[in-house]
Length: 134
Image (cartoon, rainbow, N blue to C red; front, side):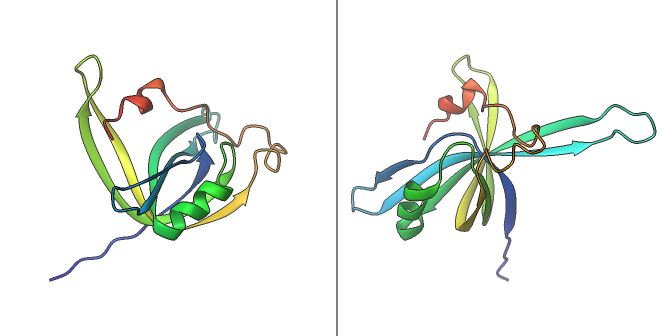
């Protein structure tokens, strides 16, 4: 029996798009997106945040569109298929990444558009994002 899954994320782009081409000339682009979830704060509890980083990969025409329009700080909605991968970081410690292969994306605004609230954007990605072996 065949299966199907779809994931939708809305977050802020953590770094500009990296566009490259496979040996056969197929465009592929990747960028990171921070999805920040806020919880707590009611009944005197302290409000907390949790940020999850996704590595987004776009292929073919979508990759070329992403390289033209997606910039660090912009808010995007990405629809695609998610997969988690484990690896060892530079110090040999286990680490993981969440990868989203995009079927589509929608630009939602820029950092300047969201500065009304001031805290709608996640901190920059951790240094270990560069350690991902692909």
